[in-house]
Length: 161
Image 1 (spheres, rainbow, N blue to C red):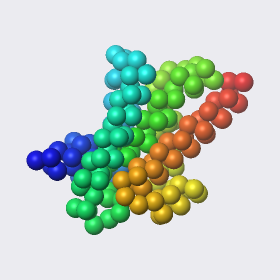
Image 2: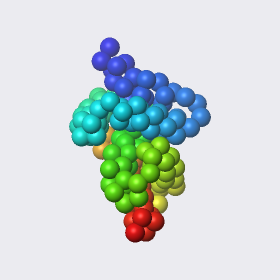
Image 3: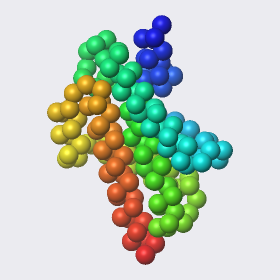
Image 4: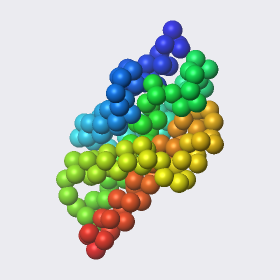
């Protein structure tokens, strides 16, 4: 029972079981989830929720990791949630650099995060290949989210400045 609940959580209510592009769909679902939550909940509460999901993900991955054949199973898409939520949580920073509607920031964050997550430029590829276990599954997506924040911030700085 606990193992099946962990798997349901890690594949984001079966998004991870979608045959084509489950990571992209999970990232898109994260953007939609964020936009819905942002209308009702303060960004700090969303940040705490994301932090809680991160720690719960580490525990759940460790619990079910041995059931998968791969070191970074495609079915686990909660790492896409964590990586995608990071640039979305930085929207208040983007708004100070270049004020526009949040949907535009979400679109840009989605596209750039997927770019970094799929292509895995250095050091993301190094992290993906050399970090093992639950943290290895999560950390390459966290770095893709950090790269996204940096690139968006630099671009908006020059656009707004």
